[in-house]
Length: 169
Image (tube, rainbow, N blue to C red):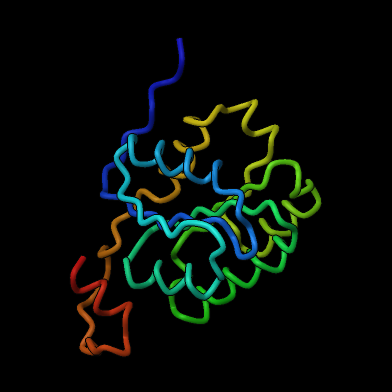
């Protein structure tokens, strides 16, 4: 009997995209649809998206997670920059997930995890957990209340997208 799918306690939002210079969007489209069917809200940016576009959208949409497919190479720098930019913009709480088939090798996965990427999924993970199992891991990591322990910001302005998004949340 398959394990029971994860059931979130909180509303979970993700931004999904395929990385810059990457037109391979079939995998992220599939993951997006499974996230949606599992109850997550998904803001899908499509393919060929830069780190800045993804991070800006994630902050503006007040998400708990980002999911990116990257099949074109350059993934180490791409994901490290994403984590760095999230931290720089005060959004280090946003979890970052990725995958790229066999393009992202085990030593790179370890480096990215050590840098702060929440999870890079490998082909072996797909075989071990299945698609829904990987989605459940993402949902579980992102099942937190964005407002917990927060005091309302007094800096609500057009320049502070995070505070506007948090006020709406």
